[in-house]
Image (cartoon, rainbow, N blue to C red):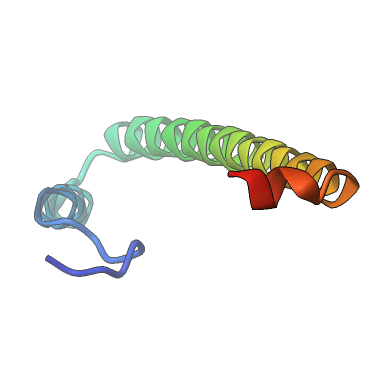
Length: 85
């Protein structure tokens, strides 16, 4: 299993190939138009979801850093607590 988070998984590769074949072989412009609009909508939803997840991850990381800073501040204000532990 690859550690590269941007590498496609096997099922994603199969899905992409399936859609590629469908688009190449489709002769009906209306069907292609509907497919393109559907894929555009899915892309928009994925972008919104990715943005939301990045924001939540950033907020979580910031909360952890604030807690660490508070802990460091408390320990530096009370250095005897470290030697008693």
